[in-house]
Image 1: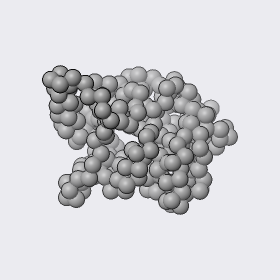
Image 2: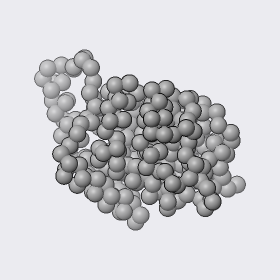
Image 3: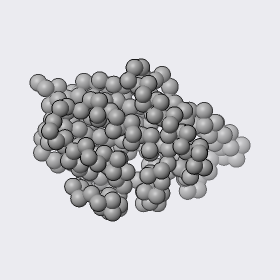
Image 4: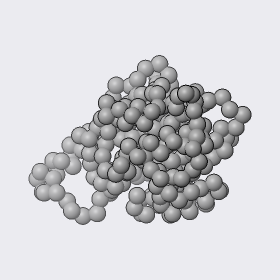
Length: 251
């Protein structure tokens, strides 16, 4: 990810609704599905600037791995020390070392996402879980994806095949961030209309991240909390993201 976007993420992720809601969902999923251990070893594979790690404090022994040294420096500013600079597909940790591996919006950055999944599975202990999120639907591709250096968005069936192909057993699979779909669809349609009228803009790409008024931001976080609660009972049929929890078999 570009350094400018890393800095923007670092500045926004403690309050911006998308990041806050995702972190709260990840914590709930770990509480629900993590194997019973006295002390969990938790790895954030592609930890970025450390926002997710900061929300998991108190859950166990926290580790972070990222390919960007700038991101790891920001993790260090948050007080984290168990950090490793390496690509997700070649992390180099010992086999079966972690009880939980998190990968939030990372696989879409990796040219060989099968290698990334295989490596996360390798470092995961039997009975342990992977908590994964990825952007959904290639037809939602936008300037936001280009600014974040995404290589793809995922359709549900191929993403499920990717996870199961690594040898993991899926225990939760759902769309997520359904509340953002109307705004995302409107933004994509508007961008494509402008391109049709003016031609493709070859200037610097911009993400869709910007500060919202406090009450609106708070409301969106609460709506994501409702989505997380619903996932205990159903798989959401629509959403801008896909979330999966997958377990490594004991045998």
